[in-house]
Image (cartoon, rainbow, N blue to C red):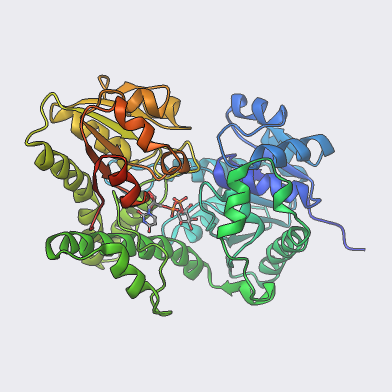
Length: 464
Ligand code: UGA
C-alpha cells in the first residue's frame, strides 16, 4: 500500500490553517508551522486563532487525533516532510505591489531544513514570475538540495474557507516537474474522497451549514476539475481570477449609479444580465464595493507586475477608481437626504469586509465610518464579529456599540455596510421607536425595501 506523504504547512492564516486542518482530518500527518508562538499555542489548544465558520471543530478533531502538529520549529517539521505548502502572508507595499519578504524567508527556512526529494508548493498569491525567482533562491541557499517547485493557487473564500477547501471547484497546479504535479494532485484527490462523506448538518456552526446550502456542489468529476499547466500560467490564473471578479463588481457598481439616475433598479437589471450563462449572476451585486485581504492587493499587484512587463492595464485602474468612489457615493446619499452631515448621528452596521468573517482588511465599511466621521458626523458602529479587529483602523472618535440596538439608538441615519444576517433578520419595526431619524441606507442591497419602509424608514439602496 502506498504510504501517505508527510506534509508541512508554513503559515497558519485562512489558507494555511484551513488546509492543515482539512488535510489532517483526511488522514495526513500535517505539521502546521508558524513563526508566531501565540498562534501556535491557540492551535495546540484545539482552536483557530481567527474566526472562520466550522474551523474550530476541524482543528480540535485534528489535534485530538494527533494528525495535526502545530509547531514554531522548521527544524522539527521540514526534515520529516515530503511536501511543504507555503501559505505565508503577502502584505501590501506602499506602491500597491505585494511585499514578498515572508515568501522569501519561508522559502529560505524550507531550503535550509529540507531533505532531498521535497516538493515545495506555493499556495500564497504571488506575482507571475515569482516562482522562477524562488526556485533560484532555494538553489542558492541549499545548492545540493534536490527539490521540485509547484504553484498551487488557492481559491477559497473567507467565511466559507472550510467548505471551499473540502469542495474544490478547481485545482490548479503549475510546474516544470510532471511527477511533482501528480504528487500534489494525489493529495487533493484524497481530500476530495474524504469530503464525500461529510454531513454538514452535523456542524454546530450555522454559517458553515448555510454555506453548504447556498453554494453548489460541483457536479463535474474531480479529475476534470484538475488543471495542470506551466508554472507561470498557474501564477497568472490566480490574480486574473480575482481581478476579473473585482471587475465584475465594479461594473455592477458603475451601472448602479446609472440606474439611480435613470430610475432603474440594479437588482432587476443584474438579474436579467446575469441570467446569460456566459455572464453569470455571481459578483454582480452592487454595493459599497470590494475589500478584504485579496481583491485590493491582487488587483494592485496585477497592475504593478503588468507595468514591470511593460503592459498597461487601464481596465483594472478603472475598476479600482470605481471601487474607491463607492464610499463617497454613500456619504453623498446621506448628505443629500439630510441636507448636510455635520453633527449628524450616523449608525454604521457592519465593519468586516464581508459577512461571516472578522477580517477587516481594506474594509469599505471601515472606510465609510471614517469618512463620515471626517465629514463631521457623530458615528457609532457595530459588527457581530469584528469589533476588536476594527479598533485599530477606525478613527479614534468612532464609537463602538455593543449591539445593533445600542448602535442605532437615537441615530439620525442607519447604514448597513456589511451584509451580515444579523442585520437582515433584525426587527426593524420594533426598533424604529428608538431611532431618531428615518434615513436608512442599505449599502449592500441586502434588506427588503418594503420591510424597511413598513417599519417607517426612508429606504435607500445602491442603484435602486
Ligand atoms: C476572494 C475570492 O473570491 C476567492 O476565490 C479567493 O481565493 C480569495 O479572494 C483569495 O484570493 O484568497 P474573499 O476575499 O474571501 O475571496 O472575498 P469575496 O467573497 O470574493 O468578496 C470580496 C469582496 O467583494 C467583499 O468585500 C464583498 O462584499 C464584495 N462583493 C462580492 C461585492 O461587493 N459584490 C459581489 O457581488 C460580490
